[in-house]
Image 1: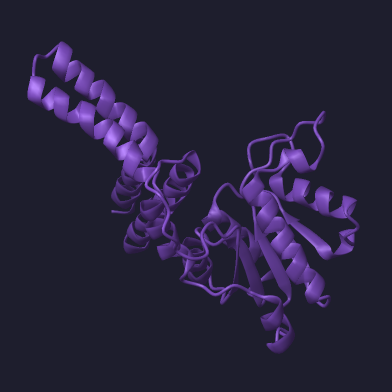
Image 2: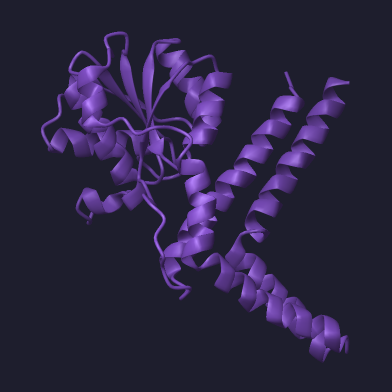
Length: 268
């Protein structure tokens, strides 16, 4: 029975990666265009081909405009309040032991400056975590992220902070994880279920909080990398920036669905 459960879980996991790749607005639009071209010119299904050839560019347009991007992103970002300077001064954080910063992407390139070896998203998370740690000097930072390069993301974040004057003794590294769930489990193995402040992108925070709670933590959320603040009357002119935000939100919605399915199918 356990073998069957594992097989089903693995099948669903592989299916998720397939869906995650091809249901992103960009790849899916290309898939529609290719399908439309084949239907129209080779299979002679003119109406079906025209439909796909129109739907592909239309999907890219819809995903690239401000109102759609704002709605998808803000629905995730608004779920947890920001950890402002006012909150840090007025609220009691004496029980917090660690400020945890989740990785997003580092690319070790020895010939590049250290800052340029991190994605913009990771830099936003790292600076937010360091700001909070600086306001709560009794805490330590946990810099999390493995990655596929020769140097773990967590280790690269530590190197960058030390170069900016941070105390290396206050910086712990979790450098083995490949996803958010592994980060939660590995950090639990490192320090136990101590009180933590969890720093990640606002759009990623709902999924991160779900997984860290599943691991047994009761984190204080500290969203970073805020993409949208307030809705404004923008034009419907498409933008690559809005397409990127739409894809980031869509990735998180797919991730939330995957995690909820996993929780319904516990595998030992």
